[in-house]
Amino acid sequence: MYINDGFRRRGEPEWAVGMLRGLGLDVLLVDARREFLEAVRGLRDAEEKRKAFRHTFYSVLGRVAREVGARYLVQGTIAADVVETVRGVKTQHNVLVQLGLDPRAYGFEVVEPLRELYKPQVRELARFLGLPPEVSERMPFPGPGLLVRVVGEVTEEKLEVARKATRIVEEEFAGLGAFQAFAAVLEGRATGIAGGERRYGYIVAVRAVRSEDALTAEPLEVPFELLRRVADRITREVPGVVRVLYEVTGKPPATIEYE
Image 1 (tube, rainbow, N blue to C red):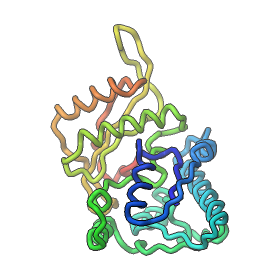
Image 2: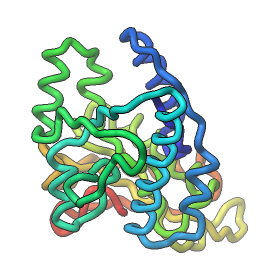
Image 3: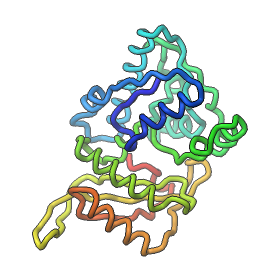
């Protein structure tokens, strides 16, 4: 089952379903975009958004599981997810039992074969199993997706800004060895100029980091000309953006994702 929550990268649901079917799996694509957006509408706090996402995710999953007669959920929870959630850093939607939450309340039981592995070990396992590089080497993407790359209240317009800007960042940073490279839409707006006229638009932050296990990270040092090109592309190709910033904070004290 693949749930399209509306928070994925452009073309990702279609890519994921096609890839899984190519591996011989019978995949059901569930369109729940409207349900997820309504669940987080009006929420500004990061933890409230993450918890609303978690509840909606398992509610949709449980409903469809009952319809098709599924009793078990095989979930890709890894060690870093558990560590961050249990320590109270941020709620990862795929951590339930460790918080005392019973997945049977949603109508199924959870199996987590990767729970004690960190990202490098997961990649090594994927290579051992013969999965294609576009799977084993794929850049990490947060469970709640673009939801946590829109700081503050989420709207369809902000999600589209984050989606388009992230595509540009991933294209431009390809081959530089980033563990993650993405764009986030910050809360608030800034003044800009276009065609000699004032514009009051979005502020986009670009973040790229080096990391092994996602528990710590360092900002990726990149040529200034690359940053200028990324800023130029985002302000030209993404409607409504007037300012682009590059994040240089490590983890800690920051987390990799903004929310």
